[in-house]
Image (cartoon, rainbow, N blue to C red):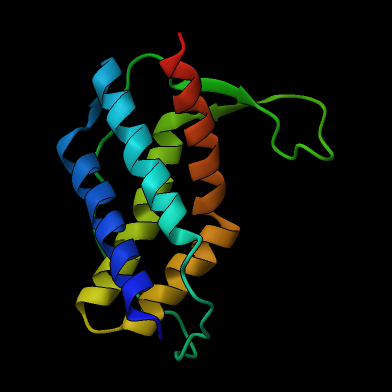
Length: 149
């Protein structure tokens, strides 16, 4: 397993979760700008994660509490969910994006800390392709738009 890519991503995931844990209120331009940078780096590093097969027959359960996050303004944004098939915009929510990404990353971080490297990597890669990656790209687009307001 390419250790360098995994470790680079783990550091980015840890940085993201630490930032969300410490900055639970997003209403200042600085907090949006910092989140955009952290999220962009995280997504870029995720693209380098190798494919792996889960070693477990059933997912390993880890419990943790989600932080409370408040996006005071700019929480709701418009997006086209499937840009190739949908024509009608839907509402996206930054607070939902932030917490869904957090949930998927934190689960992998806890698995990694418990010595389940392959399972953590699988969680992160699978989530990138099926869940948190969509939230990340939507949030990046919304955060980028906030910068130009």
